[in-house]
Length: 112
Ligand code: AMP
Image 1 (cartoon, rainbow, N blue to C red):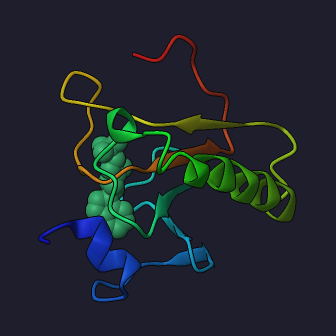
Image 2: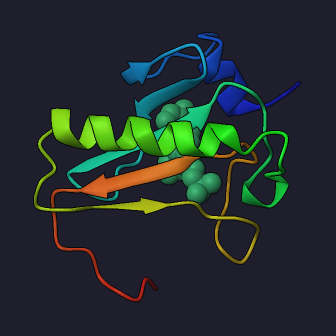
């Protein structure tokens, strides 16, 4: 499958890794939008948040556990934001489920 994040998960395209286990990979975003900006992806291909089902949803709780662990390790105690863009109007540019983790500056709400 011609999927950028599948290739990153398989190590075929290099990334700046934050964390990896058998199910997920976390790596720094190539175009950071905050002083800390990394992505957490399932290694399994899921096209987006609209493709989560009762069969594959366990990965989402695992990803949130990984993010909580990384937030402690990276000392993000001042706060962080988790974002998943889904679909064209939300600005999803890579059709493989991913969770942005943004921190290190004050983040506007509501987002633009
Ligand atoms: P989204 O636009 O929400 O689908 O998020 C996709 C993100 O992937 C963007 O923030 C991009 O900067 C990021 N991105 C694209 N290619 C790479 C890459 N090779 N390594 C790291 N991040 C990437």
